[in-house]
Length: 164
Image (cartoon, rainbow, N blue to C red):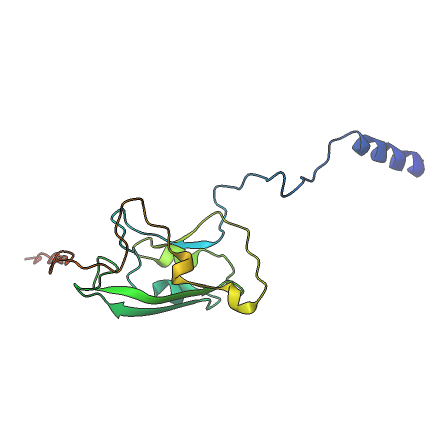
């Protein structure tokens, strides 16, 4: 009896289509919430969104992110704020793709995109530096660093009202 039931199960699944796909010829669509390779975003004017605050590095449970900040000047401006990320590195061998860095960023500079093709031949290749992570410039936009007029990107901090 068990033998007949086993053959019936086998024949039932023989008539069904395959479950697997033929990757790389066929690719399965990614889910909307998939977290893949990191990207550093830019503003529409070409300036970098990253202000070098290192909140992403503090939020990373795997300690995979290293950020070193430097001051912006009018001669060399990278971001609209006072500081920018002089060094930004992510060790992809340590990253667990949790998305905490994305959540911690106040300027939405770091985003986990949908790129999943990550392979390395060497451990050094697994460390993504700022130049590898930055989004390309929009066409016809000046890159960074750039010279700016004094005071062009300084923001006035709104004063809190007196609760009297």
